[in-house]
Image (cartoon, rainbow, N blue to C red; front, side, top):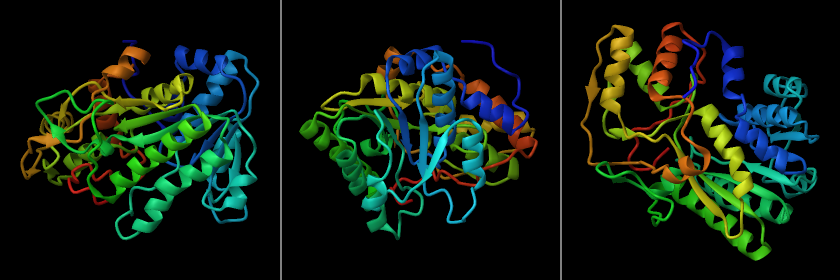
Length: 349
């Protein structure tokens, strides 16, 4: 594993680190022709994935448009994210993807990364959740039947699995809990239907969990320890993967897209104990840690053996993530202020 920085000092360094392409990502995008359209680029991973795609394309000497699509903002002028993406050489388009006419007007593209969806706030807005997570994929598949599509899903579709095992495998039967997870399984089934019907090459990415310094389960735990809040143990175990590694592997799945879809778990390789992670943050901060509840015998866990066999081990270790996050939180680094609700066991987000 390559030697890493001892700390990440500012947002510029963080954005650069999260968007640095791997050699494998450069090779993948060099081998695939055509423009790349990222639907839902305004989410937590979208901006750094878009920048990675642009940097990989430039490194390969390939000529292609990288286009990020999102609602962005209702303001007449460009919002900060639009400016940031455009300054990185990424084209941006404002679009309500649920509007058929707007979707039809989007440019053609050989490569699609589908990141649109709804999770937080889904409780109380169940109909919109289903529209975003299950109906919209059908519209996109109708619009882009001949494109190669990498579609983000979630490990939540598996449901809870015993902590004594290695986590859910791609071959396991789905057992989603709650409307969010069930609607995400609906997303997968719609992509599968159109992949089979139209012979559209699709990869389905079951992610669990991507983290960086401003957002993620590890950041939630660190923040609670640092501020003296109790850490819930109701979901006592987890997987975590550095966002740069998740970005790179996700882009590389485009080369594996197939009909019927290629399904892959992208997750950290270790079974991490929430209690032990909190205690390690406690040591780094020099602050006591408090807990609430106790560990259950099951959790949302994914087996990442398949992705690691294809794409290699993550380049950033858990200890490195903990060091970076602890340093960032202690210095008051920027937060996205979007709790992951990782302790939720009933599937209500």
